[in-house]
Image: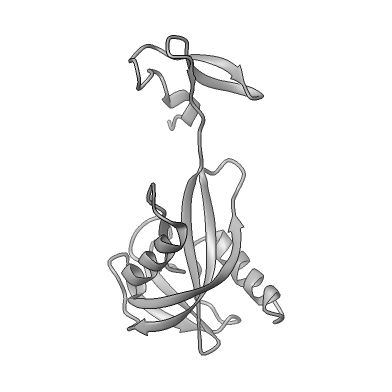
Length: 170
């Protein structure tokens, strides 16, 4: 059985005392009565990069869960204190071997009840060589209308968003 964030906080990390549940900012949250600290379940930020090369998009086939064996964009979590744009550049380099120029923020994607917020950038390659990184076993260029099996529900939504924003039929 998986615990929610609110249920997983049982002791205050500051003083070690048991927390209680209090209504704060419109809902029941873990609260330390000794330190008077309320704990909020902040989202986790991830980044993905849609790289366009010769009218096609770069995808990688994942060798890890979630999405094992299916295709997605270079992506990963933003580390605390890291600029989101720097995380995007790092993930592309690590996962598909390319150096890219970020051209614009394509959008933010989130799902109710899911802790991850995904920032998606549009990019163009400026160097490097397209190769599979540690979390994939293949990389490739795919036309927008002929994709392999995609790893995540939002992948198709991201491609449609890109097509719509670039004036192409989605």
